[in-house]
Length: 366
Image (cartoon, rainbow, N blue to C red; front, side):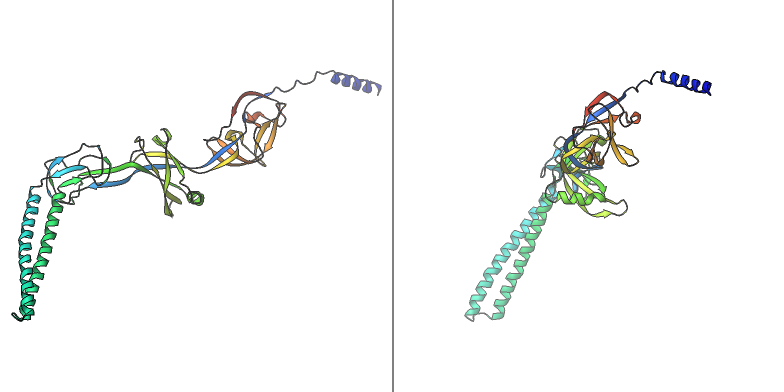
């Protein structure tokens, strides 16, 4: 019994003399500072550029195309001469119609004078009332003929005017589809040229129907800002405004069609081009913002690791809102100014000492 007790004392003495375990080294992490700033509510979509309007220029008269007064791809102005059709037959038709009108006007003037004389004679019983009425009827009939002649003159002049084809709208011309020397027919299947109005220009895009209510709410008072990036997001941004919200939801896709209008002074947007588009619905002021990489999922919800004054990691539960670019809006749990871990969370435990190897700020989206 004494030997066992002595052995226990020896083992205890040996255990007490064992060196203590070395402290765990600090965990290297990257941190960011929680900031406060504006957080725009953005709706993002893929859009398709389309012209403000497209006009297929056709001739309203037939004849030989004698001149093309522009070059393919030119910017043309409304009213600018584009094509000329041989005007000779139409000029002759105008002259003929005017001659017929002049002849019938002379006959009408004579008939009016006859009617006036017969009316005066009938008042004095020198002619019968029937003869006076016949003269008045003859004058009225010639008046109708003169009116018909005037209509023929107007129609002939209309055809002559349309032998010179002008741009109905300002815009960018495409390929000339009918060349000089060809016979042109009115309302042919192939237009002479197609003009696209690109100043201003539209971008058509669709958004999920869940966004409709907030878009309607904020677009009721002010135009919403839209930003388009050509090259499917790689080009320079072009700013415009929301101009159209469709009057129904596409039941097949559950989306609503929208259109944004852009001045497009530099021709950055081109019909048929695909673009990435952002619609800014509103801006939330003084929002708490952290890099999205700092927000981690846990068993009890989302959390971030906050670095305290002693450079130790503390777990902080948060309630996160929407994302804005690479930032997340924090609705509850942070107030701004805290240091949060954005890289290295997998090696952290609560209270662990950290070594900050990098830091960056969370900047609000402009």
